[in-house]
Image (tube, rainbow over the protein chains, first blue to last red):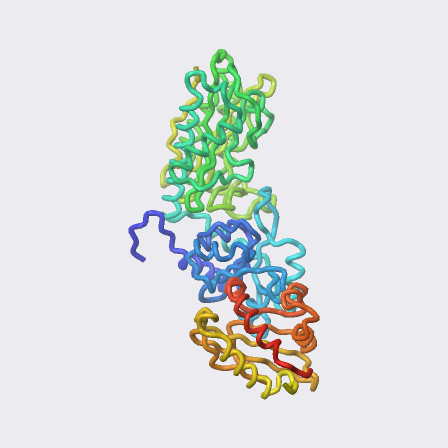
Length: 404
Length: 132
């Protein structure tokens, strides 16, 4: 399809790709329930419990809470006849309505229904619950339910041009948030603000350039100052009402959203005056991030990267401050957990031997923490694995500045 | 007026006369749609349906059907007795839907926008003196 929209994604082609994989895997109907699946197939934000029923051929049908169905239909590429609402009413509860539609696609009610089951560290993942699974089993007595989430996961792993461009745009939106924060805190003005206010200033900066949401379930924009930057292993810092203080570090982790694609970038500061020891920590971190970004390329794995980075940390004498992991997954809204497919030694966790390939996207995520000295840093940036390296989605300059 | 047997052909004819006479296309929002109300376990033991067809707000078909039932955009089904209780105003139609006594098939977002219209013609139908 010809289009001038750099953010265009061919969603009908995605559905057809799923249908081809369903045929290959012997799945007659796919029942998706994960937020990542809804985003990847509908191009609409589905904040309420939602499902997508994908038949062997033809258009899929989305089911969502009735109060939001018209809005989802308005934003999706699907028409109003393929976005239906459910509610606690005879024939209109989600189990009855979805089972009735699935039966229409199964000959005599018999066949294989692919569902999405498993577990995740990410709370809004949306796997089918035990109740839903058993209720669908009862409502479809002649069908067999199988876990089929790998179909969507393997298709969504490699990013198309429209998706990549959306991520680039979201990355630049995070950059605008950082500019807004820097303008607010420089010249000693940081002492006026709390962490929550910094989160709000960043949000305003990002929204002014079109970001629609501080998407992260971990508290929107994550802001930490002082000892909170150095919490051991602490890669989750929803902002608090803590005031920014002179002589402390500041961690600004921003989450912008553009057409369901996600900006995720962290920048760190030292609020003056900064000690030589703080600057030593800061240099360690910046050097490590630089090396990590230089190292990301096709052919490496999470474990080989971690080995290489931890060796550098050991040689420089700061390995004790490191979390020995350097990534998390990223994709369209709802996909921010595992890298790649569910094929590792621990089910539903990232496979440490996953081999990166061009057009995969992930978050380069690095956490440095020294609780004893109440200092820590975080780096996050969405990166695209390219043919010979990686491209960062945020272009905000890598540094840890001392803010006077 | 002599009570008419509920769901008989005479009742359907009376319903059509009243609906056409009292509801203008504007009052029906110039709606084009179809609806099937399926009554399970009628007093004689069989299932029957009432079929409504509207074109541009005009009722073009109101008829009592027996199986096989025609296709329709919206299907409401339930026991005959449930519908009889609704007609006698012993229970409300919304309550019957919310408690699962009635089952609705069709796009509920569209159905919500049509609820006031359906209420309008149900009110007219409830004014027909019936015997059940």
